[in-house]
Image (cartoon, rainbow, N blue to C red; front, side, top):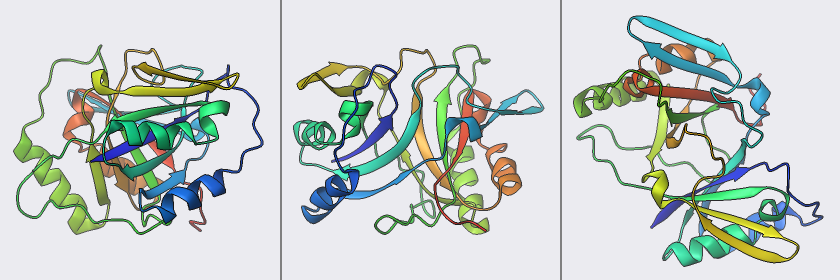
Length: 233
């Protein structure tokens, strides 16, 4: 089963001199870690929402919180216990916190299959983080509309891949504090805005924002556009 590990900051984290590259190599060699990339600071986020006929683009994350996603890793583990073992051995389990989310397969029909990434070099420039918004008007995206959006993105090169996540009730939070492993149910932040999925988007900032403005999920939530670390000149 696949799990997304959200590597998050934590103001209550502890200093560590563990080498994250050693963690990467360990789980790559075991065939558990599929891919992963660090993200630029949350200060460089742009958030896209659609409310009625209005497209709202703001600088910064949608929710003000001290914890923010600093990167992601995708692992393919035998079960949740193995996924927790992987997360617990990450240096950011000590310096920050890690949210383990099971991936939920989503069949949108012919022509909407994901393009797999290879190793540590996703072909996309951005990670779009889909979030719920409890203050948004009620709106249920039609599967056919989501499928059309994916197909359009695949054809234009904007959409490269995506993962739909099981509800936050199935999230597991992993931390190490004073040498003790803490495993609790729930997300990396207590805010009401929850991550529901991730999409890998390519292009420049304007192209990515235009594509996300057509995302059906942006009508009932928000989409945070985060740039990966890399050379995109």
